[in-house]
Image (tube, rainbow, N blue to C red):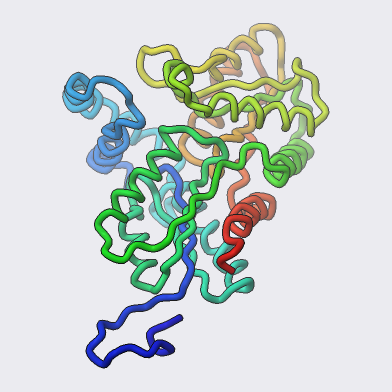
Length: 345
């Protein structure tokens, strides 16, 4: 109910209320590809104890004296390869904005009280101004939708942490719901299946093997009880079954390892190399752990791993786009949002 429809004393502060917010959140993006923009982004990201679970004093020294001196230039070059020059922003920002805009159109037809916003856990637009803007617009109920199909402490949990930090500073906190991961939801598996089949049909070759490449994490995190690996494995199994492929033609791998610790295996780059050396000439790679194309899919998979495959003896390599803001992708996000909004709308 808005202020205009509420009876309050004449001296009561103007307060908007009665609206419902939906906040989409993805991992993050630098503001630009220059050294200092990348450095700021990496510092925020890699300073998060959910992301790097090591001794904080030791990590501070490594991060500030070594990593932040060297890594920004290399990452800046990588981002520069995929940068959306028309909007002067990363593709992840472009796609997430579009996802929010399309969701807003759909949900407005369901309930005009709903406001949809979007944010990044690291970089801009940040979560704090996004939540505050929704509160100021009268959202006393907010649904948080982390755009991670699989849960991990380093992704989903750190979003919860940041939202809690922001809410702790609010006198009038909105009621909060958090959408759970959707790694095994039929709508999601069907969307992946349909998208993959559609993209393969466009190729001038038939992939002998399909890789489902997920973002990696240190093996230690799994041993501490993180459910991420198991949820990735279930996504891969359900997708493989939906595609009616055997385990020789469909493989689960993990990419983007960082540092010297052992990460979840098998590694994507090692698998790509091994397949090519064993005589496999054509492969396709899908990234079911990403809701939108980003550096890890557009540069690491489509460019870096393509080069690795071909230099190792392979010939045909296809990087399958993420669901992004496609019809199938938006159906997944709509279903997640509408399911969690029950009772509010």
